[in-house]
Amino acid sequence: MNHLRDKPTSDFCSSLLEDNGEGYVVRAAGRLETMEDIGSVVVTTRGGVPVRISDIAEVRIGKDLRTGSGSEDGQEVVIGTALMLIGENSRTVAAAVDARMAGIRRTLPPGVEAQTVLNRTLLVEATIRTVAKNLAEGAALVIVILFLLLGNIRAAIVTALVIPVAMLMTMTGMVQGRISANLMSLGALDFGLIVDGAVIITENALRHLSERQQELGRRLDLEERLETVRASAEEMIKPSLYGQAIIILVYVPLLTFTGVEGKMFEPMALTVIIALVSAFVLSLTFVPAMIAIVITGKVTEKDNVLIRGLKGAYRPILGAALRVPMTFVAAALALLVGAGVLFTTLGQEFIPQLDEKSIALNAQRIPSTSLTQSQAMQLKVEQAISRFPQVAYVFSKTGTAEVASDPMPPSSSDTFVMLKPQEEWPDPSLTKAALQEEIEKALGGLAGNVYEFSQPIQLRFNELLAGTRGDLAVKVFGDEFEPMLKAANQVATILRGTEVLTTSRSSRPPACRSWRSRSTRRRRRASA
Image (cartoon, rainbow, N blue to C red; front, side, top):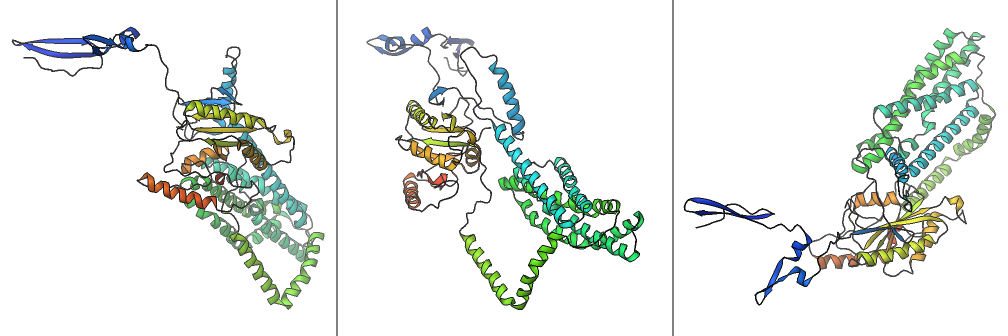
């Protein structure tokens, strides 16, 4: 007579009863609203007597499942991370976060302290200082060479002016093209290449001015200088254009890169191309005009003391090469073969490693390690590292945070070792690689841990690009665990027996410090 018409909701059990053509709605509340309601729930009966939850257990307010923890210098702390939105400027974001944290510190209750443990701004500022220093030194070196070799102070000044003007044009192009000004894009600028075309135009203009003055037997007026310099510049257009085009074509293939390689090398290639094009335009417009206006006195084309000395040393060598050419050809071929042999022994790391002035190491335990045990082991790791006088402080993140933007098992800990300035070390001549070796030896006495050494930003990029933290890794993929485990163990055996060459950075590459065979490896997203 009755049947269910409505689906029960999460809060109520309801049904519709029909009787003699009438419908009756029957609803029974089923929500547990208090702890007493939970204790009154019947779980079973014994001899007709109901057994409630309160009879067999204590009902109380519990807590969320803890999946991660933070610590610093051997004590547990709360660690927060500021996440940067895609496309934002890390320097601007870091400065804004630091300013906001300064305001938060003033509102904290007594006994509570908020400390910034990892600030990207420090590395960014250091990188900017390095780029500015390299650019200034490069420009100064080129200017000094111009003054020594051109033999005409005014001409050298005009040629040197190409450097700042070309840089202004390059910066304008980078701003308009939204090209990143970073360590690679600005560090790749070669001021010698930038002034190359200007030097050619200047030397040829000085030669023509000298010849014209000797021909007329007097100094030239402005109109005569303009005409002479114009003719000399037109004479050098083709050679200058050809030389600049060859250099530009070297960078064109870099524009075809995609993905991470494109983001790294495309700004560099575009910056160099813009700088070379700007310098070429200046060498055909700005330089000739300035030469005609500035060079008003008597122009004599002769070698200075330095050039005469170089020519005097070169002539005997040239004469010997012309007398016995095969000897010099054979010597050149031998040098070429020797260079080829040395090339085979070089590493294949295209980009030198950026020193972040800090160390990041990942401590791994067996997968079944609980968070409590893992945290206890991590505190011992921090205590061992913090004893080094070169270490300012060390902090760690174990497991997964409240917001799982960086999922990690409880058996894994990311440890960040922040170093003091090297001039404050007991032995300032000690290298970072040597210190890393000493830290690894100190941690070797802590059983149950396996470590991978890296740097904070480098570690994140490695995870983002390859899903692994080390610079070198071998992944084994498959559908069945046993064959993959067997293959992984075979790979690990071969790697353990592989000789590792000593490098200047460390006696062993970071990825070769510990080889672990895993059937799968999780990919993680990098936070700010």
